[in-house]
Image (tube, rainbow, N blue to C red):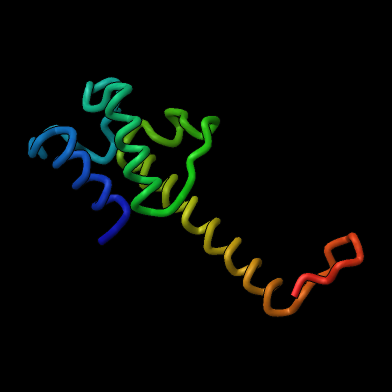
Length: 106
């Protein structure tokens, strides 16, 4: 299931109580009244838990979260960044690296 589909299903089930007709990938959550501040907090908590990401306070901006499409893209970018970071950490762990204080991480 895609990120967009999972977020859409959550909004429909938990926030709109089954009213799928109100949600479109490009409709502003805020302007349309789909999400209020409590709804955003609930949705952010769901996203962080479901996708295993952390969303920093400075990332809580309309450019990232105001539509289903923007939110899905933002989550996908966060997930891709986490994958890259995990690869770097795995590489460091496997190969050992000088930490700058004379200690070699292995």
